[in-house]
Each structure stands twice: as structure tokens, then as C-alpha cells.
Image (cartoon, rainbow, N blue to C red; front, side):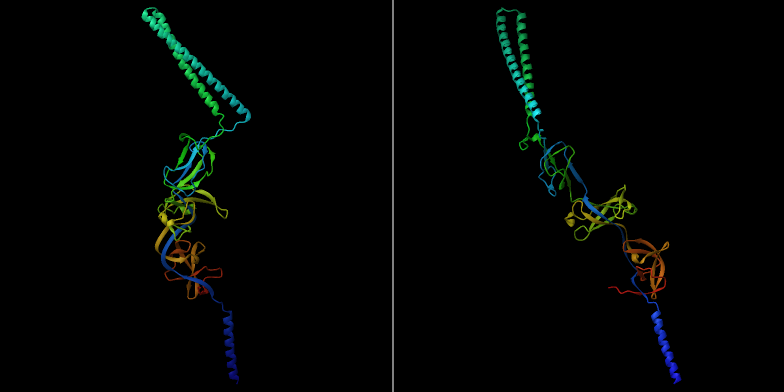
Length: 400
């Protein structure tokens, strides 16, 4: 009996010890894992941007006047030479009572001067007729020898002088008439624009085949020389522009591929970098940090029918390709972290997370290129937390 009792007690102790060891043993940390595998790697610079017409024409008023209400609206097509607006002379200003009385008095004085000039012309013509009759009589007397040569010349000279007097009187009459017309014009208050003569109307015409993008002056108004009236452009020739950090712009070259998405239509659009502007500017980010940025301009490659509905100034998202590697050893970017001055990962080995230094090359927002430290098929821990240390037992978490 004693022997059986000892054996039973020993067995119970072993079981109890096993239960205690199992209860106190650290449980594996549940982690997400991913396998290192080769694949294509594309590195892009991602920024918000907008599209715009490549060649924009701002039509301005070439002279001062009254702009008649334009009949075109934004979105209307236009062809070279088509009339977009008309400018007519400005209506005369209104006159107060005193000024109007003065102008009326000058007009009456001009009328009297014109009548006086007419009377002076009539008198000069009468004197010329009398002088011409005297010449005719003198010639008859001269033929009969009844008048001297000197008297004949004196009568002819007098007739010529009277002719000059008539010419002077006619010029005086014309001047008086012009002054009268000018005085009367000062009294005109309104102007019939519909009845304006063609030489009184200036037409603003379209210079290209395109669309009216904006009508900057929609109503009739008095405009000054240089006043902007319309914006014209061709939606068939458009470009995309976005500002990127100068540190990222250094790696962008003309001809680089650009992928445009979130433009409002189906799929993505293609573009090519035409230039990186040489001058940067300061821009304050949403976090209040001053950044040096530069514009990147790209030409849209897809035909207009592929991007139907995309207009001038529309917002898009640009992905400028700076590197495109067809095959590289890739590790998820969420598995890589800084360990001092070196990049590191936790590699899964025999159920434990082993800290491994790695050499990283190119990377984008999802994956990074592994130059050394990992091989194809290795399993790495994603998003390692602070509780994870070198040698910690882990258990891969099942993905949904």
C-alpha cells in the first residue's frame, strides 16, 4: 500500500508541475507575416496636381470704349476670325445746367459765325462777278483802241483779286460750319449704338480654333485699353502640373512617365514629363512647415476622347515614375525599420523572431528592394511592436 501511495503522489506531483509550467510558460506573440519574393518595382513621386490647357490666350481690349454685352458663353466653340465682342465709342458725358448753358451759347455763336461767313462769301462772289463784267467791257474797249494797256491790266488784276477773295470766303465758310458742327456735337447726350457706322465699331475676334474658357466681362461696360475680356484655349492640347519637393524633383527627368488617376473618369491617364521648372518657391504645408517646391509639367498622351469631360483647372493625382525595375527582391515596407544606423527586419526562424540587418535599395509606398540580408522565400514580421525582441516566440496570425 505504501508503494502505491508513493507512486500516486509522484504522478500527481508530475501532473501538477506540468500544469504549473504550462500556465507560467510565455505564450507566443501573434504577428502578421509576409514572404520575401521577387517582383517588379516602380518608384513614383505622388502629389496632387491639376490639368490645364497648354496654350492659353487672354484677349484684352485694344482700346477704350463701351463693350457691348458679349453673346458667347464659357464653353462655346470659336474659330479664327469669329467675332466674340464689339466695342463702340463711349457715350458723351452728361452736362450740368451751367455747362449746358455755356455749350448752348457757344453753339448759337457758332451758328451766327456760320451765317456771317455765308454772307461774306455771297458778297465776295458779287464783287467777283462785277470784276468779271469789268474785264469783259475792257476787252471790248481795248479791241476798239479806246482803253490803254495799263488800264486793261489794272482791271484784270482787280478781277483776279476778287477771285482770291472768293476762295478765302469759302474757306472761312467751311471753318465756320465745322465750328458750328463741333458746338452742336457737344450738346449730344446719347448715342444710338445699333446705328453706329462700321468704322465706329471695333470687333474682338478669336485667334485660334478652340473653346471659350472664361468670359471675364459678361455685361456691357466701359473698358480701358488692356482690360481682359476672354480666356481662349484648346482642350485637345492639355498638360498636367504639380508641385513636388525639390529633393524629389532632382530625380525627375524630362520624358519620365506620369500616371494620372482620381481624375473623375474610368481608369488612369498617361502623360510624359516635359520639363521641371528651374526655379523653386516656398510653400507652407498643412502642418505649418515651410517647404521648397518646384512645378513639374507633363504633356497628356491619351487622345481627347479618352479623357472626355476633363477640363481646364481640374484636380488630379499625379504619380511621376522615377525608377522602374522589372525584377527585384521585394520586402513589404511595413516589415523594415531603423535599428540604429541600419535597416533591420524580424525574420521568422523556427517559431521565433530573429533580428536581421538588411541593406535596402529603392522603395516606394508599399515595398522596398532588398540588396542583402534576406533571400527569396524568407518570412518576415509585419509591423513589429515594442514587445517584440530578438528571439521572441511568435505565432503567425491568420489573415481574414
